[in-house]
Image (cartoon, rainbow, N blue to C red; front, top):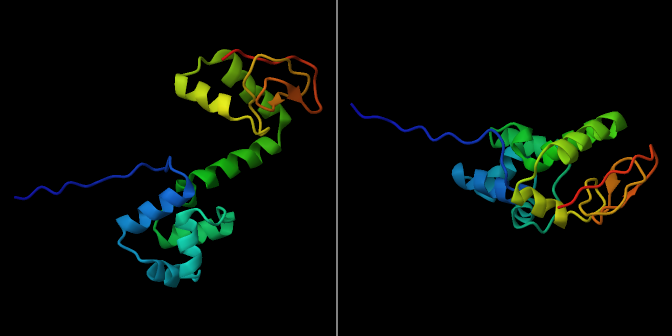
Length: 157
């Protein structure tokens, strides 16, 4: 009796879109033309996506690609990030609660500290030792900005 090993993949990819797409195509032995046929997208466009020379597609296009590759759209990291951002955009109260949990109550691992230190792009969690005067959003140097309460929020990394 022969035993078959079933390779199981994680439910979610931790790679960026281009790597995830390329990996799924390789795993399924699909060429750009074959995937283009399944998605009704051009093979050239798909090639650009795997090379990272085009931006990550919008959610509807990502859903089309996911369906063709037999995964859920939330397999892709960027799709999940957009879903989280949409939820957070709808609730400043949730942003404050999440901020509190992440920064005030949870110890950071070294890799998370490194991510926070690099995240000086103004998209939310600023790392540094500065002062906050806004709603918990930072610009990477520890200075909060925006409208909201005046509670200072800072953390040392």
